[in-house]
Image (cartoon, rainbow, N blue to C red; front, top):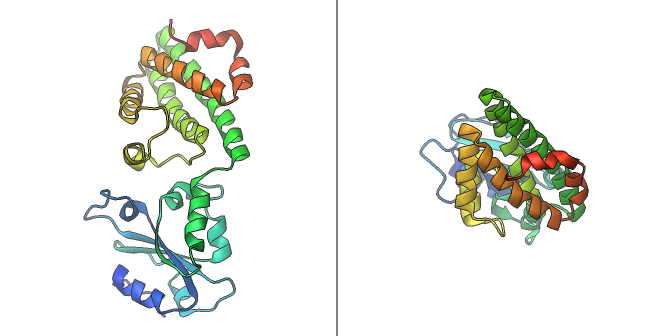
Length: 245
């Protein structure tokens, strides 16, 4: 089967659903996020094959056009995809198009959407320390009259902060494109998503030290409740610079 530049999503679905080697079809990206697709959105599709199977569809591995991107993997490879890795969020919010494993494909996706308890705790501790480090540098640069450095460090801190907040709730961080979508449809318990986005926008745009300190106070309380006292206390007296005056 030669690669077909004109192959459409619907035409490929017909091919794939007729092939017994295909045990799952999983749609990711904008088409899997309600309300996010535009006229420019393609279909990003995982094609999951039974382990050890042979099929002509393998010749379409790497197929990529403006309308259709295909990732063709074995079932074992699909289980491992994004575990860990950048692809995890995409698969966590993916949509099952075909599941010939009596719900097994959906169960694999659900596992990607929830971090293990130990995994999440370790990740949150690391991101908390990284967040405090960038925040410390930002507010120190603001204090010392270097606004550019303060803004750059503040921007770095935002990424660490988002990783931390989602890890605290055992979830992979969404890509920036889907952050508003995620917070609106799947809120972080205890957080006002709209208010958090306003603070993040203000911090990224201006490095506002007061907003950073106010937000840190909430994060510190949440991190201590989650058992990360040792990471925070490791900052010693420097915590005073991070807290509201």
